[in-house]
Image (cartoon, rainbow, N blue to C red; front, side, top):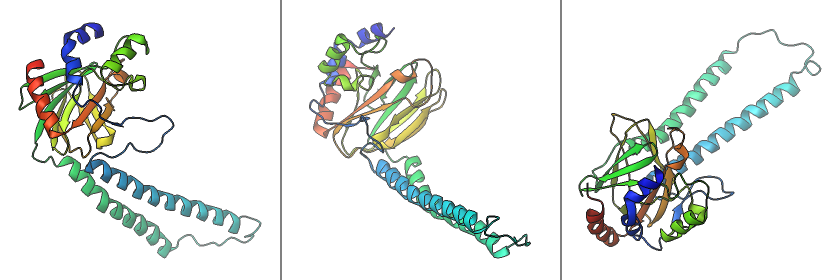
Length: 277
């Protein structure tokens, strides 16, 4: 199946991959790295900031609770406190441990809800792309441009990395380290444009996710969900299906190329001929 699918794409796929030649690969996993991929959108920056704020809050709470437990163990063990108190209630303390968590949650909500609303309130699109998850690849339709193509992992169904797969990765502008990340055709968008993705599934639930953009949306059969992003830096960004969808779930990556407006316009002219709906 994989070989026949790749054959259907044919030379048009590699012609498509010439767009964005020389682009920096920005959004990808790094060996030994921890934390987030570099933020390429306002949505991703908001998520990173919120994550940092929550990390500070939960660290302070954890240190406080740990210290309090240690103090209680030392101060009120049977040797240090031979005659324990007999009271059973402390109203001020009970009010405090009810009110303080509420205040903390309200504080967190005051910052997290605007981030959530910004993600969910879909703005007017400069470009609308319908993405459909299949077992196990993605299909993309540029709704207003009459363009459609399927996107398969380079080397899908051909086993581990070998000389043939490595050669095709190099032809497409990638290296061996992009195996299982790079696809034979890419989503191409211009830098700064507001892109709205209409997300659905054709068979089971998938999930379209690009970490550097701060976006993730389940692709549910029979439903059309939406996400949006506006990439701020030219480059290549990778994502993957993030919803367990079957035996080849791990082999349906996402490649997005963010290019200049001029290069995008030139790509559109070619894509209309290579990938008509």
